[in-house]
Amino acid sequence: QVQLVESGGGLVQAGGSLRLSCEVSGSIFNIKSWAWYRQHPGKSRELVARITGTGFTNYRDSVKGRFTISKNNAKNTVYLQMNSLKPEDTAVYYCNDFDVPIGSGSWGQGTQVTVSS
Image 1: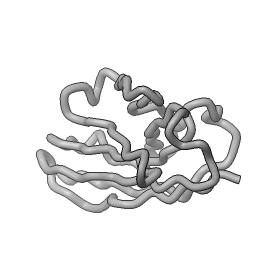
Image 2 (image 1 turned 180 degrees about the horizontal axis):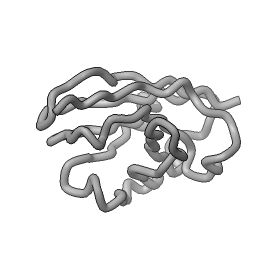
Image 3 (image 1 turned 90 degrees about the vertical axis):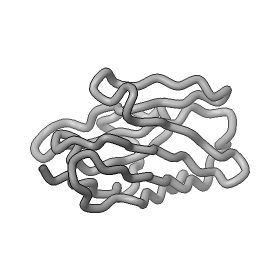
């Protein structure tokens, strides 16, 4: 059973930065692709960024150039560095195995990010 523990969220002013962390246990971490997702109130969860086992990354257009996904295989941890935050980035952020469908599977509790204008 994979366990995911997200942390690092908080309240920040527009233009500020946050670094999210996701500790993963119960999975073969280093060969899988991992992703960060976010869910705005009343909306579906959406993919924000993905990192493959070999370190290839891709991002949704609205966060390109501002967010950076990375991972530490020794610590089984995925990170999301978020810079130049905007109010529209306000959401609950989750991480998961990229192969887990958004609408199913096991998810962590997420971490709330709130960006004030």
